Each structure stands twice: as C-alpha cells, then as structure tokens.
Image (cartoon, rainbow, N blue to C red; front, side, top):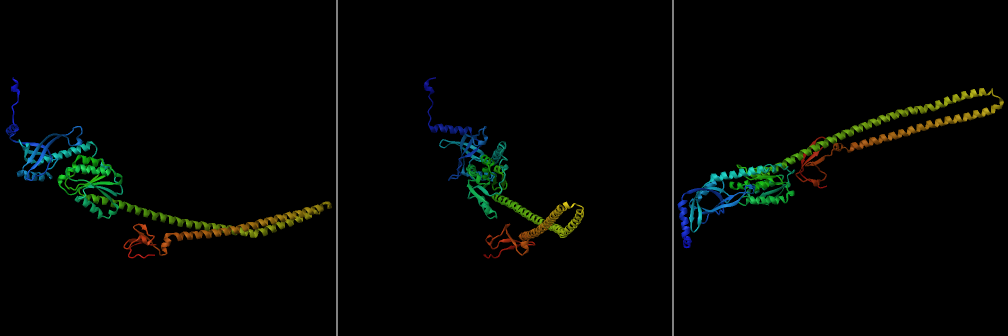
Amino acid sequence: MQASELVAKRYTLTELLGSLQRCIDHYYNRLYYVTGEVSGYRGRSQRGHCYFNLIDKVSDPLHPEAGGGELSAQISAVIWASRYNQIAQHFQQVTGQPLTDGIKILALVELKYDPRYGLQLDIQDIDPSYTLGEVARQRRETLQLLERMGLMERNKQHPMPRPLRRIAIISSPTAAGYQDFTRHLEESAVAPFIEKALFRATMQGKSAPQSIVAALERVRQHETLFDLVVIIRGGGATADLGTFDDFGVARAVAEFSLPVWSGIGHDRDESVVDLVSHRAFKTPTAVATAVIDAWCAEYTLLEEAHQRLERSWLEARQTAQTGLERLAQLLRQTTLEQLHREERQMLLLREQLSVSPRTLLHNQHTLLESQRERLAGAARYLPKSYRHEWDTLLSLFRHRYASYLTAQLNEWQARQQSLQEKRKITTTQRTQIEHLAQIIRAMDPQTVLQRGYAIVHHKGDLVKSPSQLREGDDIELRLAEGTLSATLSQLKEP
C-alpha cells in the first residue's frame, strides 16, 4: 500500500458531526430506561424547559460510610416545557419531594445528538416509584452501617442531667418549629429557669446536612455550657426529611457527647436521626413539652423531698421535745428522791446529834464516877508513900478523859454543821434545776405559740421580715393548734 493511500480523508466538522448524528439516529432510534442521579438542577428556564445533568458515581467499597463516590458517567438532560408540568407534578405527588439535586431517578429517555449542542437525553417520563425505592434502599443501608458501627444506641446511653437547665438549639431562626418551641417554653412557668442558645443551621436543601453537622461541631466546642441539644425543624416539605436520613448527620448525632433530642416535625415518618437520637418527638412543641415535664418532675421530687425533710424535722423536734420533757421529769424525780433521802439522813443524824452527846456524856460520867469510886476504894489499901503518886495519876486520868470527851463532842458538832451546809447546797441545787427547767419550757417553740404567737412561712421559707413578702403572696400561719393559709392583702412597714 502506498503512503498516499494512508492519508485520512478530510471532512469538515459539520460533515463529521452530521455523520455521527445520522449514526445515532439510526442505531439509537428507540426509547431507553436510564437510571442516574440528578445534578446541576436549575429549575425551569424562561421558556419553560428544564435542563440538568444525569450522572453516575462509583462508591468506595472499602469506605462506604464516606458517601458520594467518584464520577463515572455524565450526560446533559432536558425536559421540554410541553411535558415538564405533568412529569414534575406527578413526581412530587408520589414521592413528596420535587426534582432536585442528589435524587436518583429512573427516566424514560430518547438519545439525541445535535452538532451544535452535543449529546443529550430527551426525558419523556420519570418513574417516581424507583426514586422511592432508591431512597428506602439508601435509608436501609445507612441504618445497617450505623448498626455495624455500634451507633444506634450510643446517644441513648447518655444520662440526662438534673435539673435540665441549659439547652443548645440547632435550627433556623426563621423556622416555624423554632418559633413554636421557644414560645411554648416562654409561656410556661419554668421559663425563668431555662437557658437556651440558638446555633443557626440550614434545615432544608442540599446544604442542610453539612450545615447541621457544622452546628453540632460548634456546640461541641462549648459542650460544658449545656445539658441538652435539640434539633428542631417543624413544617416544611416532606422532601426535606431526606436531610435527616443522611449518614453524616445521623453519625454526628449518635456520636455526640451530650443527649440529643430531635423534633423533626413530621407525624408519619421516622427519620434515621430520630432513631439514633436520645429521644425523638413528632413536633418541636412536643420537645418543649418534654422539657417542661422534666422540670415539673424535678420540682415534684424537690417538693416531696422538702415535705419529707419537714416531716423529719417535725418528728425530730417532737422526739427531742418528748425526750427533753422526759429528761426534765426524770431530773425532777431524781432530784426530789435525792432530797428526800438527804432529808431523812439529816433527820436521823439530827436525832443522833441531839441525843447521843448527852447520853454519851452521862454514860461516860457514870463510868468515870464508878471508876473513881473503885479507885478511891482501892487507894485505901495503898501504902501512904504511894498515895500522893496515885492521886497525881488519878488527876491526870481525869484531865485526859475529859479532853477526850470534849474532842468527841466537838467532832459530833462539826458533823452536824457539815450536814446542815450540805442541806443548804442541796436546796440551792434544787432551786437551780427548777429554774433551768422553767427556762427550757419557756424556750420551747410550742410554748411560744401557746402564748398567741404564730410562725409565718412563704413557699416553704421562714418569714423573718416584711421585705420577704409582697401583696398578694400566699402565706402559711402555724399556730399552737393547727395551720392556717392566707393571702397577704396589705404590707405595713415597721
């Protein structure tokens, strides 16, 4: 073959692309069902046509949780104005969402090629049941992946702080659900005790998942300032629920370090975020009601604890008062018995002291006289040379025996005086004990109430000054016998 025969035939661009057009029209001259993901959706043009791309992606089998994938195919697509309304309205009625980016569709298409505009799919119809099935498949795969990663129950394991006071809200400030949530809280009695902060996020559209994850990350940076995170949406199209089936959003909620409550605002469907959150509610108002109920339950526990404490205090006071009265009675009885014993002992000693010295002296005197007479009789038989010495000894005996008797008498008198002093001390102690008992009885609050006074309480607190009260306050008056409830109509300054 000669070199000249190897030279390619020359064509104009119009001739080459026209040939390509004729080939496509000849070999692809029928309708095809094609699946793909909508991308670059711009809505209807001024002429009513709808242009977008249909793409395919290949996901990474080693990291399916990463989502997305590498672009593997792409082609332009168009829905002409003549059939757009019928296709779009039917699709939204069946799926509950409009055509938009990221939706996978099954389209009946005709392959068209124009040398001026290139290759394009002319969409004749879209099967919405495929999109529903694809959404369900993606949701099922998301749940299975979360289950394998052990994230379905992780957030539910967080204990709820008590009391529930500081709330981080992830929502849009213009969302109806956010307005319902805040209004319901502010109209409740617990509003003064709730601190809340809004972390703005886009709650619908293609950017919503990324925005919600970013808002959670902002909350995480200040997590020590909050007890609870609530994600509330409220209202909006059913199509926007796909945001809360997104794997990234669900994973961020499941792995969050604080309890997360969801109030997506849809009665019929349960999103993946609802399944992994700590608690899920149908509406933002229901979330607010749960917060209020948690506070009411906490208040009930506090009120019960206050009542138990008050009962315990009253029982302890009654027990102490009863014990004090028994102690005082025992003290009086013991003191009286001791006094009676001392009095009997003193009377006995007094009788002994009043009788014994005289008897003793008389007996000793009689004995002395008897001995003296015997000695005097015996002295007559002594030689005269010993009589003087005998008389001296006798005089000395008399003197010493008299001293002995005098010492005995003094000792008896000292004992009598000591007993009299003890009696005076015992009488003084009895008087002091009776005085202390009177003081104890006078300090008893019940004794004070018996004199006509009252103890005033307001909301469980003891009232010591008029400055603690305002007109219209409900107060409780404790009297000696019973309790009264009253409403304060007028305050008078002291």
